[in-house]
Image 1 (cartoon, one colour):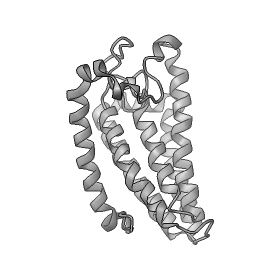
Image 2 (cartoon, one colour):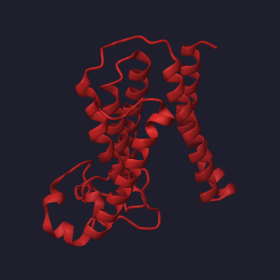
Image 3 (spheres, one colour):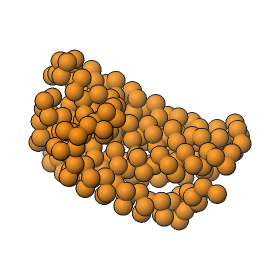
Image 4 (tube, one colour):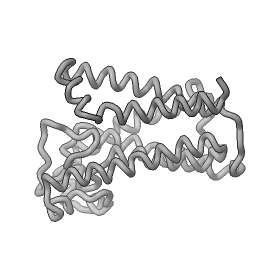
Length: 227
């Protein structure tokens, strides 16, 4: 198997693993048969394994340079990745209006949107930022395809989730949970209601970022600190 064949196979397997469960209600039937926790534990493990494979396969693909790496481009993932981890930590389990990672037990309240006042799709935006930040310093064809698709995939998911959310919430209700707004961060009332939860989750995200930063070299094989 050539480098390009392995890369195409790994990328196709990763994409299909996210698309196939949604065909014909397959995911719902598997959840019913296994239980939600078991299903998502197995699905998460499979997704991580396929992600590791596709990243490794991109590194083994023939190197076709599209642009040279400038020193400043290494700052993009270094500065944006902590934002990615904070968005992820704040988004998982939050009451979001129908989005990836949102709580199924805590209903979204347009009058008290919580972290959704910053973004109703924090995990999907985190994926876009992560992928976009990694395109800049990786100007070879395989990695541009890899990170370009990883940026496009959550953008399509945002569109799909919003279409579904419009069946439950009105456009006016969704205005309280924009795709992205930094206004709550400078609003005292929002901080009074959300400071404890947001600061704890943000701290957890930053701790995880520091851990991932130091594991990047041993696991991925690339030194992540800008020179």
